[in-house]
Length: 267
Image (cartoon, rainbow, N blue to C red):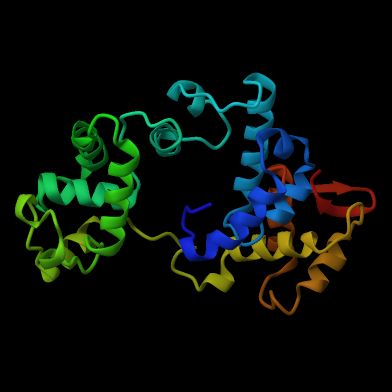
């Protein structure tokens, strides 16, 4: 839920979500459409679909208990290297690094400084950070680095004079001008979608479509024509062909169901 979504925005809907689905069994038993409705405000809706599928696998294959083995975790829907290690560190207390963007930034600067090849970044940072995790303290260690990266060792304006790691940091004190120059060199090329205003992107249209289908009562459907008509004000520049292509993509991904009587959230 926190991927590309701020903590403050996530907390209220997260608490409602967990209250509604307090266990893997409860989540697995719910219709997918209900899960997607509850996911509103929590980021990409496709994540709700993957979480729902994950819950069903955990319920059916692991008797409702999340596996601890990293390989088994990564075989679950939507679980990649970071999520698997975060689960191991925060749920099971295993001595592993949970390398989110803040953790990697702190490890990179303290261990390598700023002047080193960016292409080796993830591999080297994760290896160096893993060696730093104190035995039995992975929860505290990862939490501390996440907080430090979010509050002091920030991406654009690190507060080195306030940082408790200043004396042992290979990058401190960070020169903001040099940091900005390096960030520009390392920044990936932005694709066409990223260069457009958010309201003109495919992601925005997908979100509006799902939100409109969330408004339907259980069992109710809406025709493609009426769906586009109801969103005409929110999507004034979206032509019929591109709108239909987005709906087809949502259907192929399992978020939307199309039947003779129209569209609805997939059950």
